[in-house]
Length: 274
Image (cartoon, rainbow, N blue to C red; front, side, top):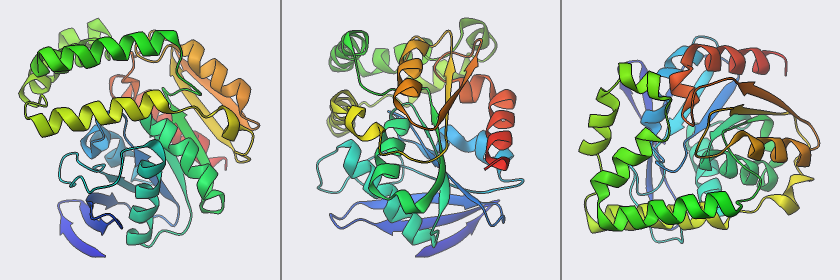
């Protein structure tokens, strides 16, 4: 493990068997750890504000997934199982034997697989804006997004932002749209990574493993989520043995950001009850 103090975070570095160099950040000093797993974008930056808030009474670990941000790609095929194994690699590097995992969107698929592969390492899971299996709506949406990525990476990035937040929230935070354009996957390598991740999330089907997830699970959804509509979380809750649902009235797909205070409050409250 390579640790380096930076601001309020401690940097964590791990190398996977196929050579991916994963970079993460940990903060907080609690005996209870929360692992944060990002969605399609795969960036630890998605959790920056939530991590800072939750670290007041938890130890929080977040990381850039393979090929994203500060982490290198490695040679393994990009599947939900591979991304779940990467989480275990990070936990080992950080010296964390047992924790709660919180996965948003694709991160929720990763969390489902993770708790199935290594159930003894998790005391609970929060599945946020995620799904049990993709359907016709998701397939059509991501087929269109993949086509847009090919035509214009900048348009793809801006569109992803516009459909992921409530319009009234974006009206007050238009810098988020500008940032998405500036950080669009412009290179062929970056586009390939996004395409691989889209293929991975569309290939995920947690139906068979759902009954094996014998641990407390909290599912979060937002009624105005256009990316992963709330009916998909209803389906997920129905398939899981020990799941309950929190449904935000609004917040869009990125409700952990747009409904930051309420989201953090719900996460903290649920974990305290474990």
